[in-house]
Every structure is written in C-alpha cells, then in structure tokens.
Image (tube, rainbow, N blue to C red; front, side, top):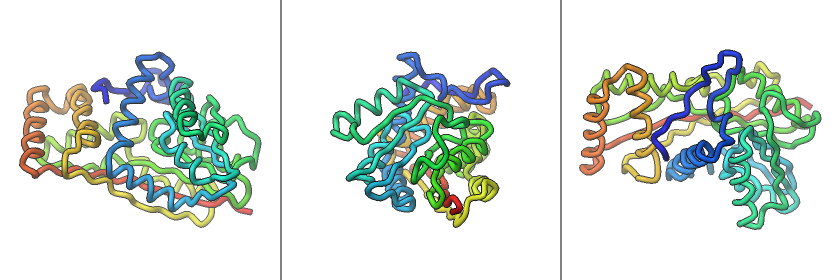
Length: 284
C-alpha cells in the first residue's frame, strides 16, 4: 500500500473524502493497493467470512454491494448466490469498478455481475429491487451516513436484509509504544475519517431507519506476527498521517516505528482493531 494518504475533502459543501475521487490512474492504483493490503490481511479474510456467514446470502438472491471498490467481497457474494443469483456493484469510481469487472471475468463470474457508477446517498434503483443490500467500510467516508442506510433500505424488498460493516478506529490497540504516543496515533486515525467512530453508531442508525431484527457482531482483527501483506504495512502507512496531524514529531514517529520493527523481530508486536457487522431486516 502506498504511503500517500487519502484525507477528507477540503470542500465543506461536498462532505465526502478522497475515496470518492479516484478516476485518475495514479489515484486508482493507490486506492487499489490500499484495499488489497487490508483485504489480504489474514485476520481480515477471517472477518469477511464471519460477517458474510451472518448475512447469509443464498442461491438465487440478488445483492447490491454499495461501495464495492475493486470487488474482493463482490466476488465472494457472487459465489454465494450461485446458481441463478446476481450481484450489482456500485461505486463512485469507474477505475475501481473496472478492476472488479476484470477480476470477475478472470474467474468466469462476470455474467452474474452488473457494475454501476453512483452515489450511495442517491441510489439509481427502483424501490424493492434487491433481496440484500450490503456495504463494507463505506459509511465512515460519507456524510450523512444515515442517507446511505435509508437508500439501501428503500431498494431492498420487504423482508429483505441490510448489512453494514464499519470499523471503529478508536478501538485500535498497538504494542509497543509509549502510552501517550499511541494515544496520539489512535486519535490521528480517528480524525482522518469523516466519522472514524461510525461502528458504535450503526445499531442506532439501523433502528432509526425502521429496520427490524437488528443484530450486531463485533469482529476483532488481530495481528501479532507482523505479516508484511497485512496490518503492519497499513500501520506503517499511518506514519505521515500522525506526523501531519501535529500530534507527533517526525523523529518521534520514526523512533516508534523502529521499536515496532524490533518488536516484530522479537515476537513482541501486537495490533488489534474492532469492526462491527450490523444486519437488519426491512419490515414486510
């Protein structure tokens, strides 16, 4: 994953962040790298299995994947609704969706995939069209998130299911590190999102949207091995974020990272992050 960061927009009239501005080739490549790095983390692979088991998409169902990105989860949704099911992948980035479409073609799943460019706050679909609406790590980038949930509920048929999976960055734990320095790292990661604490508000937002049978599954991603294809590199990419926040000096950040690398070598490194999978049902 590139070190370059994607922060919130400087335009107060456009409350989205730069994940919605990815049509340039360099921006698309950077975003795709970020997404691959997170989804390749062993703990995240396990997390995806858990929340999709909770959602339980079945053969023949039509699923809307909101903010599908490069389609890693989209493809798994397609596999789970076969035969005769289908997935519609929506994202504001044509470049990311093109990657998803290519991946589907390579696996022979493209006939079950439709891709659409659009805004999750104003979905381009008729009422009651889908059996399931799903989004993963989308709402923390969008304001107001309530609009996304209401739109997802609108396009799902009565009795259909919604799921949103969102991280709460304030649940991040890191060892080693000075206590105050680690607190600054956590704070910088919360503040760089439009709502870095969105995970704790999902249940309330589902209920306010009129959804029934709302359930929540907390899922803790853990890395204690320092896998280079997973969370360790994600953590490294946050160093410029922390320094730019002004909470930690460049020297302090580099010293801390040296401590992390030494801890990985000794087997003393630990990282965790909690995300919340919330599922609800549209009333009949």
